[in-house]
Length: 116
Image (tube, rainbow, N blue to C red):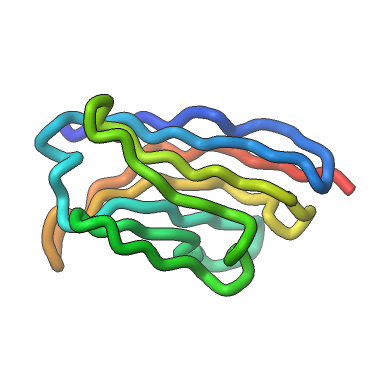
């Protein structure tokens, strides 16, 4: 059973920071890419940040300069450092692994709430 275990969500005031973690197996960690989506109430799921196996990163415009995706190869873990958080960042954040163009694996989601 494929597992991506997220942690680090919570409640924070606007301007604050959180770091999300996504731990998985060594096999899944070798996926073509890993990253984070988010889904706010009443909105579609949105790709926030992604990192390829080679280390290339990509971010949605709304988080550029505030969020940083990184990975720890020794721990098979991907992180999302979120700084200068805004109320509009409030969402459930999902870790994903793109094993192949047709196969994605997902975590269970972690709630991030930013109060104004």
